[in-house]
Image 1 (cartoon, one colour):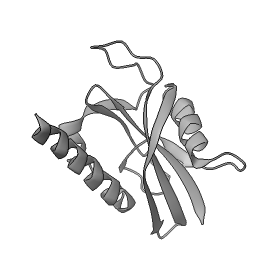
Image 2: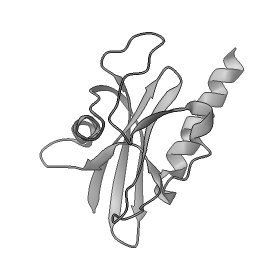
Image 3: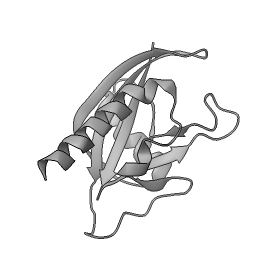
Length: 136
């Protein structure tokens, strides 16, 4: 089973999202930064490394948000989703990232087309968002 570390980066009510390019599995789907674990690193270290390599953003992991195993046609994967935040940020400004990565407002995140294995973590993020709204 292939282990994948994924960084779900949240900043100021926005999430860092990209689109999988042509010629790769799941092309055209939206995705969070992440990639294959290189042993002996942990999937947390993988998520941080991949986020920096792909987006140019240095992040700090806060917690493992979700773990999901999934059988795709092309591979069997274990996805470890790590909730992260930018290491340095300026209030009112979203950190710069390398295109095609972009910041998506939380309310728009759930309208994007993610791979099927992301459904549970997206539901979890949506539940957390609704819980925060009900507190106010």
